[in-house]
Image (cartoon, rainbow, N blue to C red; front, side):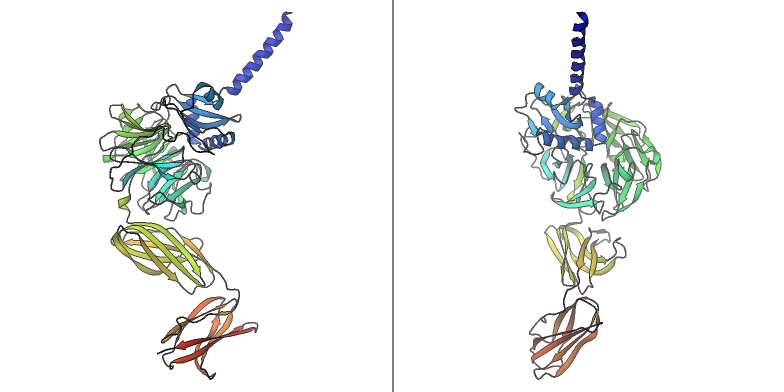
Length: 592
């Protein structure tokens, strides 16, 4: 009898164990945070799964609990549950959606969804926003829940605009937003593998690097970015062909080479790069160090020999710097110029970004919000709650010499018309227009120069026409030059001048004229072209051209200064190499 009873008990025990295994998350909280922080594609995968299941990917409760989808396990979404927004590791858990539903009341929660609007979107944000005039100076903070960039007041950290840049399709995990030396905002995005470009009003302008679009052999799993003194973009890379290196790009976003080579000085999983007067510093999450390099990218030493998952480096006066430590023992670490620890503040943990305010306090970000702390290691306030905030960067839009808002090309016959506009200009001498037909973007030719407007806060528009081009593809860029000789290049635009498909003679312009007019024609193949002028009696009175032309669209001038006023006719004759012939006649009127 005991043998019969023993079997069901064992079976029940096995089934119970399997059931518990199915619902028990496979990650500890700290491990989940570290792994997904280094590999945000796991977060994106979990987020996409919440869309399929029609469940929220982020939840913020009025009680101050924040939950974020971070990974998938056995087709179940795993949420990082942060019960303490300040110390995110305190009593934190990893739960499934089923466990969250059973443990928490969500009726008043702010919940973010992939395929439907956010519920209670204002929960966790200040009731009033800063209206203080900052003179074009701001702090920019990317945030992962809404794939956006938040704007703060640099004087006190107050929230100015929670949706300064909102691009949920373009951005998938924005890490850092900076003002480029070329006059636009760049946002490095970990999952899209692109450095994206926005104007200073937050409007999307397209991708910046790599210039040809997504190319994981160049950029993959990118984190922070910065600019060298020569204007070259440098990006920290944690995957793909440039894994564990710092590639650099020119002013048009074209990949040049590795500024810091793969693994140089033990570099492993770089997260941020900053430039001091005589060196540059790079934080790295897997080497758990801050590495030091020359301004040419050569390894010097490890200025910080041990720090758990360092992220943003914030430079301060005299070469001192702060580093946001993400993993335990997590803290904001302050170092002197040689890397000696001055202080550490651990009142807020899981740190990503850091910035020192004018009052001496620090703004810090973590996976649950934006916070202000003191040098006494106390919390002043949480500015934004329930937000997956990233790096904090100061921008001054008043420093932009010329803010180029658009640069476009259009083709009219065999002419390319370039149009560009500026929002503001500061000491703008003018624009040099350059062209190349080389797909490697070399061998640029200077076509002309357009004077700038000096200094103005009013929008300006410019135009330049490149005429009488043979069929082919052309590339154009602007070289914007200041009065002191400094310059910046615009992005590159292209134009296709196509072959005409028939012989054509156009009406002269102007008509009537005195004494010069223009005659335009097209030939689809190489041909000898003759244009002659006749009076009303049919007598030839002038020859305009008689020579061979390749296929294309052309325009010639006719000067009738030796003719009397009256009506005349102009005749065109095309003779191809194989003997085919085409002609046409049109009337013109000379009035003196």
